[in-house]
Structures are given as structure tokens and as C-alpha cells.
Amino acid sequence: MIENRPLLTWISYIVLTIGVAIVAFPVYVTLVASTRTAQEVLQAPMPLTPGTHMLENYAAVLAHGAGESGAGVGRMMVNSLISALVIAIGKIAISLLSAFAIVYFRFPFRRFFFWMIFVTLMLPVEVRILPTYKVVADLGMLDTYAGLTIPLIASATATFLFRQFFLTIPDELAEAARIDGAGPMRFFWDVVVPLSRPNIAALFVILFIYGWNQYLWPLLVTTQEDMYTTVIGIKRMISGGDAATDWNLVMATAMLAMLPPALVVLLMQRWFVKGLVDAEK
Amino acid sequence: MAAEKRALFRSPWLPYALLLPQVIVTIVFFFLPAGQALIQSTQIQDAFGGSLQFVGLDNFRDLFNDALYLESFKVTAIFSILVAGLGLTISLILAVFADRIVRGAGVYKTLLIWPYAVAPAIAAVLWLFLFNPTLGIVAHWLTSAGVDWNYLLYGNQALMLVVIAAVWKQVSYNFLFFLAGLQSIPKSLLEAAAIDGAGPVKRFATIVFPLLSPTTFFLLVVNIVYAFFDTFGIIDAATSGGPGQATEILVYKVYKDGFKGLDLGGSAAQSVVLMTIVITLTVIQFRYVERKVQY
Image 1 (cartoon, rainbow over the protein chains, first blue to last red):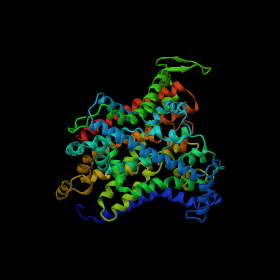
Image 2: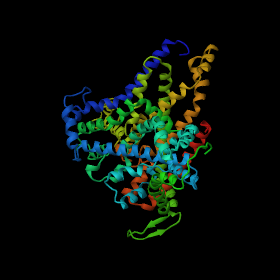
Image 3: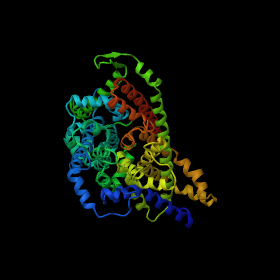
Image 4: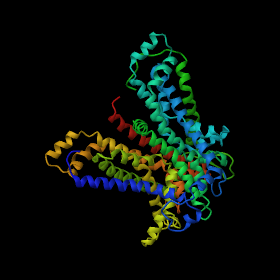
């Protein structure tokens, strides 16, 4: 602190507390709604204190969803988890390999491959949805985990991040490995991967959230309820209109959809912050 | 690619094998579709759904003569200015105050960053529930205060709803970067200014804000990209582009015309326009990064 200004310090705490309260308010209301009956939620205004139906609401949605969507949220959470893990691990794996090739080898067309990966930064799913959908449909990957994940695992960002990091690994390590007779893959497994652990952890947090929160892509490639991810499940629940929607159950599903990524952020906060900052370089 | 390794491995085939997975995914799911979008953008399908016909740039001409498309451009512009402007302002204020306090700083930081983990579509559902005209609690307060609140009828209110949801989700991200930027400003500069008699407001205006400008510029680009593309889930879950066209941003229109309207050529032409916008933004962002980070 530069100087002692008690008034300003007080204002700081007040502003921050208001900020935190506004940020938390929608989630609080969601939590309250998820503990009440459908009738209690429908009376306007809804009471703002937690009710007593928490367990039965959550048990109900986990087993068989809400409203017109019959699939259980438990199943959807499994789908979300599988997608998020495959996307995160897949992206990290293929990026580690390709960054290793680009940094530690000289070969014809190296630059060409580098730029080819680089250009994909400029093509988010949203701008090429229709043709990508067609490719996935032609490959018979609709309503499969492969269709949900593989189109999303190519990532220029992760490749760049690893490339930047590999360039900082001292050359002496590779030289020593070579003198000791270790081949490139041995060096990769025994030196490069262990050294990259902090980067892998940071990236994993960011990519897990990215994978869990996917929306447009699963919306297109899943048509069967038992392949829905949690985020898509909610969208289907509310599309029936006000009267048909059991808001208490929708809100319980919303809580469940938020929980895993929020936990990852809170428990791995240090890696999360590192990942965010690294990924934007 | 400035920096290079001196110690290298040699193999005629291994580097290609290592690149293979990424290259396959990139070709099949990036270049093939993008190429197809380019080709389709110059074609129309005849009225019977049969053969494709090459029409050159007709689709683009139609697009820019289409009042609905131009309207969508306008909506996107207003939406992104509001999201970026409000998001940056609010998070800067919070970051400046969070940077000032000592006790409890970590707790406040934790409590402010977790909305990053919430999916855009879920953020939309949370706010939609608060503002729902029949059962929303905030809607109830607004009605009691005499506001004629119904975002299902009034376009401006719908736009406000999606802006709030979008800003709420993005504040955490901006906050983290602003806080990091503030913490990297040398304290000696601020102390010198304080000794010379500059108060907190003056110090902010003449030292802190100018030194933050690289961060601000970077966040501005990121927020515009966010408003253009990542808010699809918010729009779809909260308003589906309605009422009328009031919240139909460009990305949403590509989806609607392509998947609901089945206008392949028009949707592909829109994709190409969007790609051009992304590429422009990415180039701007990279020029900035190049200045900031010395490889």
C-alpha cells in the first residue's frame, strides 16, 4: 500500500463486496430454486430462502431428468465428463507430439506444417459449422463420443504453448541424452514430458472447462437423448415453454452442470491462472 | 520462428509420424470444411434441391443487399460494444480496488474468478430465470417499480438480458488480467508520485491507466472475439435471436440460416464473411503480441 487512507480502504471493501454479491446472486437464486417444489418456484416472487426439497429434486434429475427430456442428468454428466476428458487429454497429447517434432527435428516442409497448424487459430467451429457437420455426418460419427470430441481436439494454442516451452529447455539436456545413447522418444518420455508437467496441468484445467462447456458442437451432433451433454440437456429442458418447465428441476440441473468445472477452477486455482495467462501468449 | 534448437535428433520418418495425428485432424475437420464453405459460398442449389450451380459472388452481393443481414451486423456491433465496454469497465474497477486491499485479497479474487467456469448457455439460463417475466425475481422487482418488463416482447430488454449474462461470465477473465497488469506496475513509480503530492485519482489517471493500456488493448480484442463467437450459447439459450431479430448476432444467423433455413450458399457466404473478421482480429492480436513478447 502506498499510503494509508482508511476511507479509501473501506470503499475498496464495500465495492468488492458488492461485486462479489452481484456475481454470486444468480447462483444463489439458482441454488434456492433447486431446493424447492415446482409450485413454490412458480409463485412470484419466489421465496429467497432455501427450501427442504433439495435431495428429492437432485435425485429426480439425476435419475430421469426434467420435463420433456426423459434422459437422466446422471447419464448426461457422464457424457460431459467423457467429452471433457477426451478433449483435454487428446489436445494435450497431439500437441505435445507435434510440438516435439517441430522443435527437435529438422525436416522438409517443417515450416509448411507449422503454418498449417497455426492457421487453424483463425477457424473457430462457429464459422465453419455446416461443412464440418457434413464431414462428421459422412463419417458416421453423429451421436458418438468420437463425433463429440475428435473435431475439437486439434488445437493450435496448445501446440504453440508447448513449442514455446520446449524452446526454453536447455540444449545440454538433449545433447547429454544423445551422448548417453537415448533416442528421441526416450528423451521425449524421460525428459520433455516430466519437465512439461506444470504446463500440462495448467492446460488441462483450461481445456477441461472448454470441453465441459461446449455448446454449439454437441447441439449439432447429438440427436439421441442418451448422448446429450449436461449443457445441452438444460437447453432441451427449457425449450418447452414456461408452463411445461419444472424450473426447480432445471435449476438443480444447472447447479450440477456448473459444479465440476467450478470445482476444477477452485481446487486448481494456481494452475487455472497460469493456464489462462499462458494460453493467451 | 526466431529461436531454434542446436541439439537435434535425426530421423527420416519420425517427425512426420509425430505430426500425423494433429495434421489428420486439422485437414479433415478444419481445411476440408473451410474449403467447402468457400466453394459453397459461390454456389446455389436449384429450387428442387438438386444440382448445384456456380454463381460467382452473387451470394455475397445478395448478402450485402439483404436488410436482415445488415441488421444482424448492426445488432452484433451494438452487442459487442456493450459487452466489451461494460465488461472491461466493471472488471477494471474491481481489479483496482482488489489491488489496493491487503487483507482478504485472495478470498475476493477466488470469489470473483469462478464464473469463468460457467458455460455460456448455463449463464443464460441463470439470468433468464431472474428476468423471466412471469416468475423471475428481478422481473418482479422491476414490475413493482413500474417498469413494463417483458424481454419476450421488447427487443431492447432482450438485448440487455444477453449483454448482462455475457458480461457476468466474462468479468472474471478480464479481472484476472487487469489484476496481473496492476500488480506488475512498479510500486516505486506510485510512491514517487504520492510523495510529490498526487492523490489516488490523479495517480490512476496519469500513471496506472496509461501503463495498463497494453493489457486493456489486448482484453479489448479478446472481448470482441468473445462477443462475436463465444456468446452463441447465451443467445441460443436465452432468446434464440428474438424477439424478431433483436438479438440475432452474426454467428447465430449463420446457424439459423444454415440449419433451420437450409440456405447452404447464403450460410456459407456468411461463414466466409465471419472468417474474414476472425482473421483480421487474429492478425491485430498477433501484431500486439509480437510487440509485447520478445521471443
